[in-house]
Image 1 (tube, helix red, strand yellow):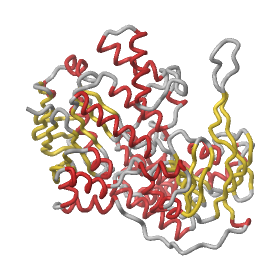
Image 2 (cartoon, helix red, strand yellow):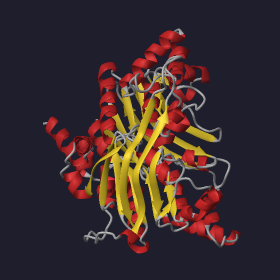
Image 3 (cartoon, one colour):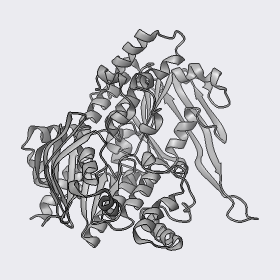
Image 4 (cartoon, helix red, strand yellow):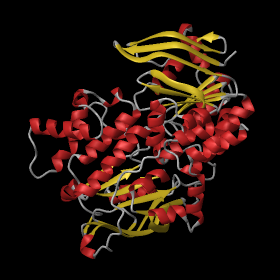
Length: 542
């Protein structure tokens, strides 16, 4: 008997069909991968299992879990199951966490609720779980709040919450999206250990075929709410019998057509972004009444130049200082020391009025798309928001036309203009974020994990779009990413960051093929590879 048995699951929301006759089974101790494009129904399948669907949802079929029909279970029964027998790692960590509670309180909350443990015992167990997911007590005390952590660190807290009570079934919805490749490998190993130790079933929802190939015993491929193909992972992805499976596999390895001819060394007048000896030190908390507060040096004496029209990747482990450096470049934070200049104009120390013309030429794609949007504003307003930076502000009709054009460029429809962020999947929200960055046709886009939330098909289209804008309009990019595949595909040069410092820089292919520093070698060795994973599984199977 299977641990989870989904039969003919159909779902519609407000009369719109979302899932159409989905069948899926997971046995105890088995990992099943659920893949497909953004909006294919992967997350809605997970939310159907958890019974966390919106009020307008109408669901039919059967979801059997450990002998219980979840669709017929009462809310009290579901409350007893959620977080105890069934855990879920949600896709967007910042929205899954309570900003008003410490990370210790949030991990301990479920433990206390289900086990009736004392606060002290629950916090002790929370501490062990946070240690296990790579948040040691000396660096990450239980008293920290979510906003004090990087995106990858927040994701680890969400994983700790989901795994704290060793559930029988764990649903992991893009569990490693915000993680660097080294930590991704560690978290995937942790999830595999929990599966083996506790005979836990794992439903791994991901757009990363390499990760799914390494982890999953079987795979189910969704498109438009329907199962296109299902079977043993290595065999399914190597045979690629269904055209859609073949399309996904090709998209995961897609490299945009770009002009790779060597470019002349930029003269000083061609330098678009100049970063000189920049450091950022955050004051820490006092650990005792008379002790000095500890300081955190997030960025340590960083210098580099980005020529006009050049595409550069900044790679490194989660928490190494990449996003902090990006915020200083965008004048969202002041550096402790050093200077940052755009086209020769210093960014730091300016008021908002004097930054206006600089911001017009410098846009950003944030790592967490949902957190960067005002949930009360429509997509039209959100995408058109940067247009106020233009010298000649467009009228209402022109704003709508420009917003519609920007949506079309990232694969969305003009009919989406009147919708709100909560009506989109995580990948679709990231596309809206990219459309907003493109609308003013800036000279520089700082992209903080711009395609981490996108499925492989849309990622290929977005990378093609980035490459086209780079070649056609000369837009320069600073790609902040942990995905070395993206760095290889879209950038001319790469900078490797470790513990706040740039430790290696050079031609992208050269650095990633022959890394010279330990930090770079660790990243390259930990990066997942679909073909390597298929070959390994085939070899293990005989």
